[in-house]
Length: 256
Image (cartoon, rainbow, N blue to C red):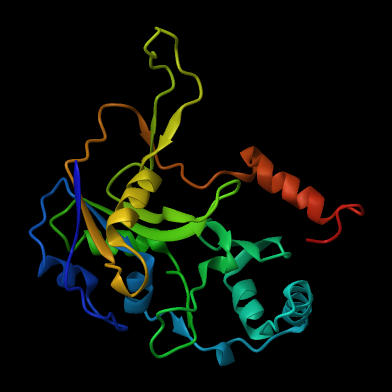
């Protein structure tokens, strides 16, 4: 398997045809996996906003005041309002905003970016990343597209690439029922393939002003294992979120 960045992708503006820009710069094969950074997907879809678009309500002002007290830096309540409007659940309110987006991704500040946003203050995540991936894929020779983002993880320092949208492939492959090297049957191993490919692509894409937003994965083989579209963990099996919910509402834990 090899990964390579697609060079010379220009600054993306609302309405740009991402698929056409990619086709013009690389000869794709049907079995390629094209990983596209959510930043350029959002820009092409016009997901650029100004803080003035989010007049702060009482809840946002309360959240901003609490966060300002924690680190002695003034927080803009309009940003808190933007996070609230892009979320379906505020999982944690302190010491940062951990939210679930409308499409199921859990991350800090609803994934709203405040860097590399020409013409606006905020860059929101795509509204429906799976549909974005499907639209791009339908106009490419490659059969598989992943929309990627970067976010932190519990118990780990730093950020890594993750998948927030995908099309043309299962999200995970299931090793349960397979035998390990000692002949024991595996009972819990489900491999999140799209996250692993997104993380590998992020190593090639880079960060900052030298980053490249499109990476091609060539030679990846899913194999003959069962696959599924399960990606975001259901609440019933998400014990970390259940614990956070209990902590944030407990009289001893305070309000997160």
